[in-house]
Every structure is written in C-alpha cells, then in structure tokens.
Length: 92
Length: 352
Image 1: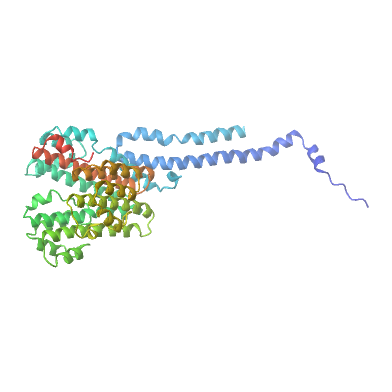
Image 2: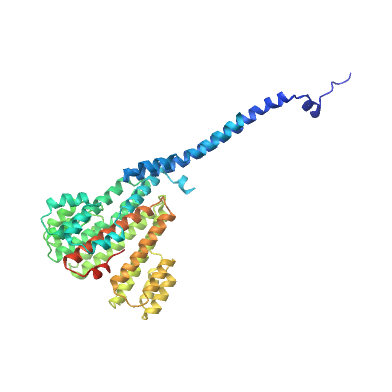
C-alpha cells in the first residue's frame, strides 16, 4: 500500500493566501507594540523617579521653584509618548 | 546609572543640601559686609538665613551688637546641623552624626579654656555650637560650674571622659589643656575611621574624605610647627589614619630648607590642586594665610568630590563645611569691626 504524500514546505507556503499572511503578522505586531510601550514606560518611570525625588527636595527648600521642577519632572513623559507613537504605527 | 541606582532618599537629601548650599552668602556679599558697621551687619544678616535667630535674640540678648551676632551665628549653625540630622537617610545618618561629634569636643575645650581663664559663662556660651551629642542643656549645666575641676567631674560619663580624666590626672595646666585638645582630635578621627570602616554602604567614600581631611590637618600642623620652630614630640601631634603616613610627616618636619620641604610635601600630596597650593606657599607667608590657603583647597576639593559622587555623603559634608566657614567668616568680620581692624586686614582672615 502506498504511503500518503506529505506536502513540502514550498507547497505549504504556496497554499497561503495574502490574507492568511496578514493574519499571522497581527500577533507579531502586537508583541512588538507591547515591547515598544513597556520599555519606554519603564524608562520614563525610572527617569521620573529620580527627577521627581530631586524636585521634591528642591521644592522643600525653595517652594518658589515648584513650577520649574514640575516641568522638569514631566519631560521624561516624551519617552513614553515616542513608545506610544511607535506602538500605534505598528498596530494601525 | 548612578542616578538610577541611588536610593530616592539619597537623591532627595543631596538635592536639598545643594539648594541650601546655594543659599549660603556668596563671596561678594561677604566683601560688601566688610564696609558695613556692626549694626548694619546685624540688619543685613537679619534678612538672610539668620533672620529667625536675629529676631529672637534682639529681644533676649542684653549684650553688645557683637554678642548678638555671635549668639545668632552659634544658634543658627546648631539649628542647621540638627536639621540635617533629621533629613539625612538611614545609611548616611551614622556618618553625619559621627562627623558632628567634633562640636562636642570643641565645646568642651572651649568651656575648659574659658573656665581656666576665668571668663564669664555668658561669654563662653557665645562660641558654643551645640550641634553634637552634648545638647544645649548639658552645656549650660557645664557653664554653671565654677571651676575646671567641677566641669571635668560633670563630664564623667560622656563619650571621651576617660581621655579627659587620664590627661588631667596629673593636674590641670595650660600644657595639659593643649595635650587634651590633641588627644580629643585624634580620638574623634579614630571614631570616624571606625564608623567609616563598619561596613555601612558608602563607608569607602567616607573613608576617602576622612583621609583627605586628616592630611590637610597634618599639613597645617607641619606648617605651624615650622612657624614656631617646634622640635619636640612631633609624633604625638600628628593625626594617624591619613593618606600620608605619620612617619613620613615626621621626616618632612625634619627638613630645614623651605624649598626642599615644599618639594617633599608635593611628592606626598595626592592631588593637583593641593600641589598647586603648596607651590604658592614656597615663599614665606604668615601662618594664618597658609592655613586659609589650605582650607580653600580642602573646600574646593570637597566640592569637586561632591560632584563626582552626587548622591553620597560628600554633598552633605561639603555643605556642613561651607556653612562652618560662612559662620567663621561672619564672626571674623564682626570681631574685626568691633576692634576697628582695617578692612584689608580682616579680608586676609576670610576663607573666601
């Protein structure tokens, strides 16, 4: 009795339609987007931790610097915004 | 990475002290004060960080303008130092409080000297800085004692009482007071070395500062010994545990020619600013100018180290030292003005 013929890799790829390829990329893009947002968010957190602590110290001594240090504290937010933009570009 | 790895409390306290440091009186203000009368100086410092003390004491202090300034400076410095102990993080608290213990022996020496010279308690009190373990109430109790012997008896039980009792066992004289001061300084630095070597995080950095300060003290001592042509027991006058071994310092003291002495000292001096300062001291200068020149280098180096180690004990020590010299400068100006010393002469005694 003849054995059933296994499809080769080339035959399997040839069988994939463009829709199927697109569908398989969605998961990969989601992973990439999550890496982009999580690494930038962690970096922002670390930067804001250090700047925020120093800002509280400076404000405790000179309350009039509150406005300036507040701006300095939120500057690292730009990092996470970059991450968000990259993530959105990947997903959309 | 140092920024990220430093604990939040270090960042917080070091930033606070940097801000405080920026509020110290700048050089230009001190120079401006040289042209003021005592009453104007009181008004001027009453508008700066000394406002609270000047306000309180102007109603309490019955003495002269100079007495008012001296008291206000002492109170302010003690208050500042205590405040720092309250805000420093756990890890640095031990170092900071050990450092502030220098005021304990300084206060005790001042009381003993004052009592030995028959000074009034109020006058001695003006120069006391209750910033160490011995608080104001304890120092006030010591001041009420009417003889040196009674002060020594009242000191039993304090950290360094065994040294005082040992030295005064043979009698209380001017020489024994000098010996006591030397021994207390040595004991203070030994204690600091123990604290630094106790395995607490940051101890190595603290030890570096300690070695540097001991070296500066020893070098100042060497210049003093040369000035007064002292050839006695040099070994006992030097503070051990510095970067330059005591045996080397004794050898340096044996060099007669000033040029050779400076050359040999420069070889031992570890860093460039000190070498440059020593080069400036090659020609004969009054001892107070030498001491001030060396103190300036020490402060400059501490400031440099506090930038190298932004979240360590250095910014704290740097602020404490600069505050100490700000108060010393204000005292010098006030005292100089009181006895009508010319402005240029007072300026030579300022660490600016």
